[in-house]
Length: 312
Image 1 (cartoon, rainbow, N blue to C red):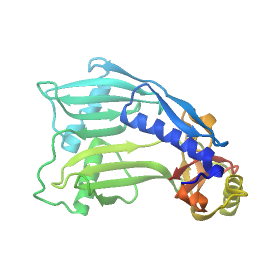
Image 2 (image 1 turned 120 degrees about the vertical axis):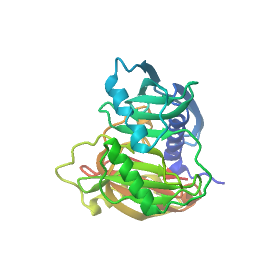
Image 3 (image 1 turned 90 degrees about the horizontal axis):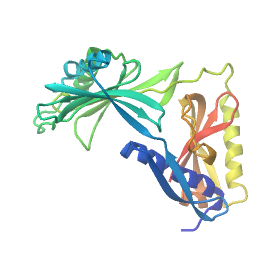
Image 4 (image 1 turned 180 degrees about the vertical axis):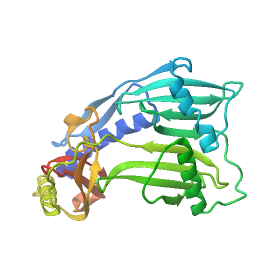
């Protein structure tokens, strides 16, 4: 397959970003990844990407009774198995620059039955059970799954708003019930509360993803101005090449600035989410051989490109 040099730089950055993200999800440990990338000049090289450390510290009920009491509500709220003893730890996630407390429900042999993760304010990060789901003898309908998820969240003390969406999980079975986060009338990209309900109507897991938001700008760019900013960026990549593009959607969302198109930001500390126009661009010509979709985050205040994504 022939190379498209005009998009080589951001393809290399996206490869690097994918490596870091994969390591963060799969290991949660201090890791240095080496990725072969192609620079804008078309020269292969090595890019060292260092993931910040993840550290763990044991916590105990006598010193952190608030954490253990809060986590102790999960078995009753979600119907999880309760252990005969519990263990706890505090985790600092260096990559996400976040901290959370985790309490595990253990049986008499020390085997984990369930765990609950809480943020610094005692709010739910995640909760899950580890026993096996039953044989599929019954089939809960979506409305029942939504009510079950809502009831469990309410019992734990987590309030959700807006319309729930229930999607049947074709891989694990059961239903994924999701509430997307909306602030000031705009969706927060990737933020949600999600509950997985087994096909017999029991909750298997619950999780909340929520990022800090920057203040909304006093004045926001119009859609036309955002489109022009995206056009200028695309012109720098495709000018003089056998490639074109078309805009495949544009809407305003809260987004997390990232290093998709700026190598200097690969190891930067995550920033609060900002209001931006999300512009989806579909390449054509030679570029379409490598990239199916480019997403640009156009800052709603000043029109700068603050990140995005690439689907190859």
